[in-house]
Length: 128
Image 1 (tube, rainbow, N blue to C red):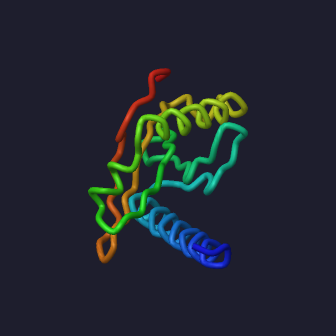
Image 2 (cartoon, helix red, strand yellow; image 1 turned 90 degrees about the vertical axis):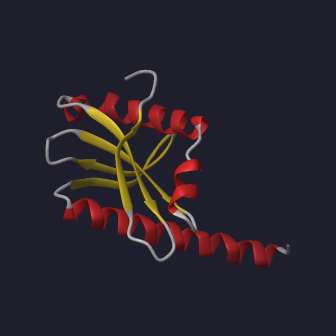
């Protein structure tokens, strides 16, 4: 693959990722969630979406887009879960009041020609 082709592929994936995150935030808002941040960067990694659930719980949401929703969930491996958990821990260290009603890790899967699917409390890190 040439450099130009690689750049085009990277840009296409970036557009798909942004669109998937837009669908995820749309779904969460319809469910009564308040979006606190999108693509939140920390020195330890990026968090796709941070939202407040209607119950008041703070949710760190990973958005996965694949051709099939089932493969999207499989793409969230233990190393990625650990990276997200560390980024969330650092985020909370600077904003401890946000997590007082609890914290959970959710996943929104986006598949081709399907509605986004929200999986609340999809996984739990060791530190929680």
